[in-house]
Picture 1 (cartoon, rainbow, N blue to C red):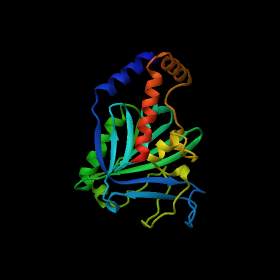
Picture 2: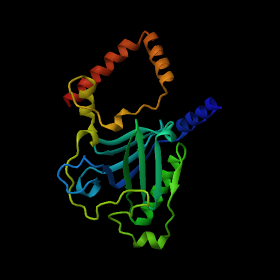
Picture 3: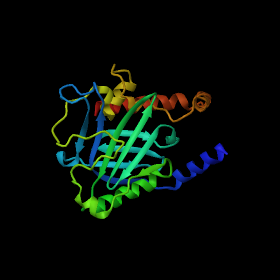
Picture 4: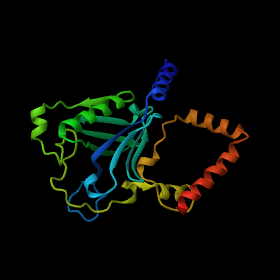
Length: 243
């Protein structure tokens, strides 16, 4: 049955096209100890599309990967395959709250969708929810049209389970690298051994079970073209670093 379920999920992702949605805001919750200069014990680090010429976007790829980017910078990225084991999602109006638990450490991210109106943004968010439901359960927080219109567009109201958000949009202190996003260039330097930084918690997650990982590695090593592939990957990584 597990094999049949996995086959069905792979079939779904293979036939579902990539979708892209514009975001108004992306927020990353900074737990106690990650905020250096703020007087609060916790805070949200907010990325606002209006603060940059580069637009915030949410991509759900046909490979079942979720990506949040701003221009060339990847702010968030993980696979939705087997995501029931580490991901909880809450939906309210035009916003999504993700609770991600990796190796015993939890982190929160929030996405607020963009649109010509709050109602259109909520519709776009609902489209993304339908895509997410192919892989993970989404908890709904029902709101009426009138209550959604009365809520402040700049800062969606928190659900009972999520931490309180700062009411103002004052700049937050830069968090430790363990909570930061990395550029493609920084990741390339890390994999080439040119950087001694520690990867953020978001990059510690693997969606492959240990047994599958070993089997995949053995198959790669038995493939005579694998060494050439590795060399080509290294070459491309060095080209990215030089950009």
